[in-house]
Image 1 (tube, rainbow, N blue to C red):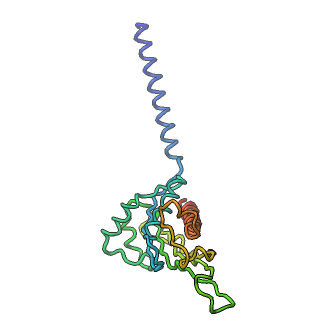
Image 2 (image 1 turned 90 degrees about the vertical axis):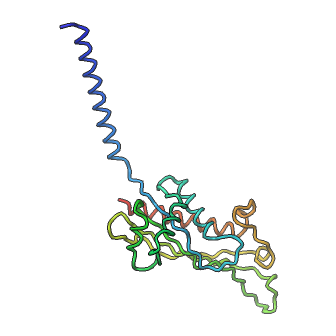
Length: 220
């Protein structure tokens, strides 16, 4: 048999064997790759009546989504797509109610859906021994309360994996209360160093950690 022909057969044999091994390795790697869930962050429902000049729903929704994206542990669905999905489904009513059948229909390509409701965002003046003190002379507390619910929609029947109310209170010095200070709005350069900006940052950090932790525990 021609030596060149034998060499050609041998070369092809090595090539196919190599491809077969690569294919097997690729499949094994894909099969053993960690599961990264698709997570929809629904727009925050704002019932706080805070009186602030910007939309707190936009701020918290955007900030939580961005923080989770930066962590790279979850596949966060485009917030605009999530918003449109909710608008299209007219049956979508109370995300904190007992009937969650609509959640599965609304988010067919997601594994988990996160709902948040801002219940309280209130600046409360601290009482003074002198009841005649003007509001401008008093410091305050910023009281925050937000309801968080995470729904697992991987199976036919949606399942709540976390539901809690996160509450916090932050001291606001007298010179920064609403009576003495024109609050810098979200997305301004000064916002992050104001008492309200710092309080929001801590709330968003807590929310992101809770979402990340509970979905990580529930995804297996």
